Image (cartoon, rainbow, N blue to C red; front, top):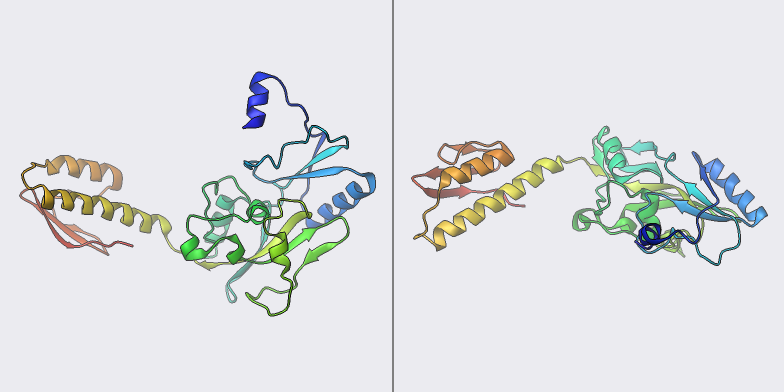
Length: 269
């Protein structure tokens, strides 16, 4: 927001001097080593949706600032259906990650509001939460191992099992580090069997509408309802049959007859 304001009412006080696209872990190591030798400041760019000014260049910074664009590190490197783990490059966006995993019949399940634009590396560096955390957990519950390039070495835990008794936990140091430790290039994450989430969500929304209509009919019987209009609304949104006909789905049955709704069962998650 600060940068938008500056662009509309003046100019940016400080911008990056160079943008570099990296496409592999090896190139990330080379870049970090060169930056360390030449006293160059690196600013890692993932989805570009940070709201805490993490991508804003400090006015007082005198060194050369290089923006490291991670968009080319967007590959799913390995899917292990036996152990239900996945090796992923951290420049991949949430939308592309789920699309790629769906080819193997699995899902990550981490879905923040910014899932379309935010990246796996951004989730890790900001310790992101998710709308589906009750089912899949937050990012710290999904990540098993992180590979990060620092000015002195590459850090990585060399295992992909969910718990260990020795410490300290390297993951907990990197999670939420906001890019201050190094460039996160790769992660091993948990995956789960793919569910048709769109179908489940549709049933949930559809069931809520039906329950609301039934509540009105029961509590306010003196009010006359035009069920035909309700039919049109639901047909438009869900492509279902009319209330006045028998409506059958796998999870629920609903009758609508003589301007009364007879409730058999509704599938609610």
